[in-house]
Every structure is written in C-alpha cells, then in structure tokens.
Length: 434
Image (tube, rainbow, N blue to C red; front, side, top):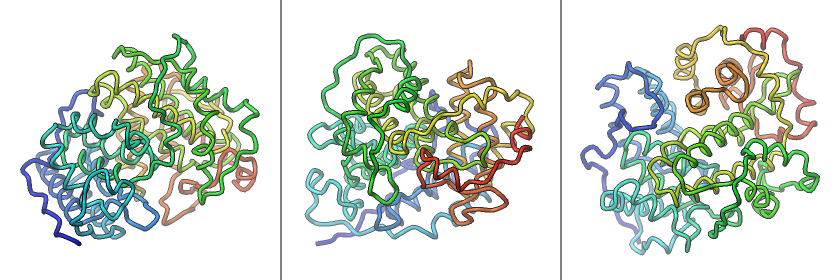
C-alpha cells in the first residue's frame, strides 16, 4: 500500500530570493551564508517532517519561524537554534500510498506526502502562480475554503513561498491545503456578486458587527470556541456583501490596505486599557496572515485576487465574531507619541531571539502595515507601539505566564468574564511604550 517518498533535491527548490516585488523589506545584513543555510534547513524539514505535528492537525511552524528570523536578520547561529528548537515537536514525514489520486483523498492528513510530491511536479510544470490559481481556486472541491481554513495556515505557508520565491514551499502549502478540512465552505460561496461601490471600510464593517444583537448568544462547543460561525454563515456573509470589490488592480490593493488595518485592529484593539496585556491567539492569525496580502494580490490575476480578498474578509469577520465580537479600544493608541523607548531595529532583534514562533511573524506584519498605511489610520505611531507591546508582554506557550506577562490566550476575549481574571495593568506599561 505504501511507497517510499521521493527525496527533494531539485536545485534551488528551497533557496530563498530576496528581490521579490512587494515583499517585506528584509534585513540588509543577510549574507549568502545565511541564505545557503536557510535553503538547507528548509529542504531538511521538507524531507524529514510531516506538515502536522499532532493528531489534532496543528501545523508545523518550523519554516515560518526560520524565514521570519532570516528576514529580520538572524545569524546562522540563531537560525540553527530555531531549527533545533522547532524540530523537537515535529513528527516524521509519512510514506506515500499506492492508491493516490489528487481528488480522492482531500482532507486526509495521512496523504500529505502524496500531495506534496504531486504538487512539486505541478509547481514545476505550471509555475508558482499557475499552480496556485489552478488548485487554490478549484471550485468543485471547495479549495479556496481549504486554502483559507486551518487558521489561514495554508495561505500563510504559500505566502512565504511567494514572498521568498520558494517553489518547495508553494508545493508544501498546496499539499497542506489539500489535506485540510473545508468546514468553512459556506463562508466561501463560489458565486460573487459585486456590490455597488461603497465607501464603508473593512474595519467599519467589523465595528458594526459588535453592535448587531443578532450575534448575541451564538456560542461554539468546539475546544477553542471559535467554530460557531462556520455553521451560521448567513450573518457573516450579509456583512461581507457590504464591502465593495472590483476587478481593478489598484482598487484591490486599496482593499488589501483595509484588511491589513483590520488585522491590527482586531489583534490589539480588544486590549482593555486598564488590564494587563492578553492577546487572542486566533485574532493574532488574522494579523499575521495579512502580511502576505500585497504579494498575493499583485501576482494573482484580478478575478482570483477579488475572490481571495472576499474569502479572506469573510474568514476575518468569522474569527472576530467567533471571539464574541470584542469591543475595540482603538482610542488607546492615539495618545502615544513617536518617541519610543525601542526602535524598530531593537524590536526586530527581540523578535528574532524570542522563543515563541508567532512573535516574529506579528512584528513583521505590523511593520508591513506601517509601510502600507503611511497615514497610520489607527493613530500616529500605533503600529510601532503595538509592536513594542508585543515583544515586551508575550511569553512562549511553554512558559504560559511570567512576571505579569502571558502567552497568547485561547479563551474568548470578547467576554467580560475573561477580563475579570486578568490583573490590572501597571501604569508604567503604557508610559514606557512612548
């Protein structure tokens, strides 16, 4: 029934490129030595590890942390440390099956090796964007739902592939997509009716949801309490339909900016000004996935770019609603000045050496939004201040809580009961940020 997986040794398949248009501005300190090492470690991970490190389908983040650190200027020593840290939790890559066909085993994680070898050939044949457009937008098998499902992880993985021009990571992300579930398919309808031109922004729509009493009382019974709106999509889609999209590339890029601002707002906005910092794990992914929006929309054809953004917005709203639509205390950021105690360079260094794999991803996403929103829609200096708030207050999942700092919370930040358990914020915390 099984056959041995083909070893991935194609030249340059995992070699990162640093000159991709619209990618994050990588550290100028990156040398050929770091690039060579990253390529070797990416290939080693692909050959040896499964994409899911447990039976719950939690995703292998090794390559994400490695590339985020590489982008921010990690040394070869630090890159090796990241690999050793992350490889400890990974499972070995499984053997291939003899009965594989690409539509026959969708959602079956044990077929990941089969899908990976299949997608490597497809990416080689069709090119990076050609393979993404063919498979991620395949309507018959709800592939866009799978692409945006799993807390955006297939999209994020493929996003790294586009950002660094890595064919192997595109194939890995497509294989991850194929082995993921499509439980969110009702949120990603195949038919898209273009709404009339509207000036209402993505963030304004999210704020309107907070006040809509029809969302009250909808709770999820899943482990992390965020699946309810996968089963009740009609309310989400009603709000999605208020967001105008067009096939014009420039207008799509403006919508990219809106979704990036939304990602920051739902990540940081739920912080109660009088409470210690407690960032929501799920809303954090709304932000980290937004990093790749520019490069996707620039490279996809407009018809696919429009479908992609509409699906991303639907999932963003669903995750926000699934956390009980927390009130967004956005005014707290407008009082900060640009005289920060930590420069972006210092923030990058703290992120590179942070033990949690999501911290450097959050920092890169915040810096990317600052680039795309030069008017700083959430308040002057807000993105910089939120970056400092992140590196100063988040600890790893292993530590959970230390010195009034805590890891990402899986509890629902939209409920007052959650914040009742969080201690008062020390007054000097905000003062130290500005």
